[in-house]
Image 1 (cartoon, rainbow, N blue to C red):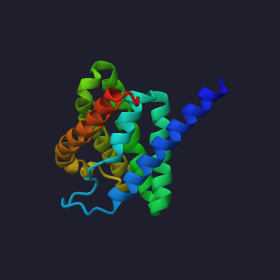
Image 2 (cartoon, rainbow, N blue to C red; image 1 turned 135 degrees about the horizontal axis):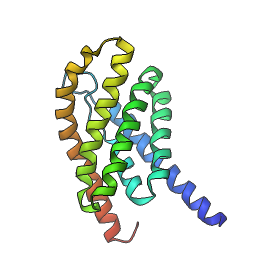
Image 3 (cartoon, rainbow, N blue to C red; image 1 turned 135 degrees about the vertical axis):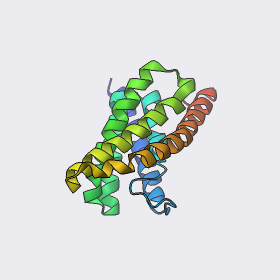
Image 4 (cartoon, helix red, strand yellow; image 1 turned 120 degrees about the horizontal axis):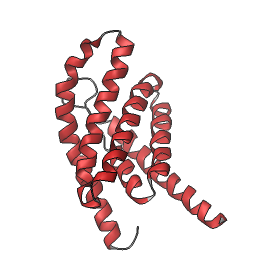
Length: 169
């Protein structure tokens, strides 16, 4: 029983470390779109992969650790609240769609998760700014969520498919 627990903790730690590395590297990439909140969300590849390989309960630990530690490492503690809101809504949406689609459609889960992430961030922005006018960014954020969600979803699906094929997962 202890070996299983160590195995689970090791998987969570490894996936968290990978997600953190991806998160920190992505933070260094300039975004060509002048709309706040638009980014690739490459660390979500790890979250999706975690949901499909270690389960939803352990994947949320990876997500929360990545957001909290990543924000502290980058010195973006204020931005952590936006990331937490977006990440939690994204995670909830992905868990819902995870139950509805097969592992051959991880990209669908990712698209809806990315849209959820953007909605979560807009809700926090509305509270912080004190006006719902920030919702004017929502159409652009949803469009970017579809594009970036498709990309990260295809990456996660490809990773999952090929690691399963070579019996690593």
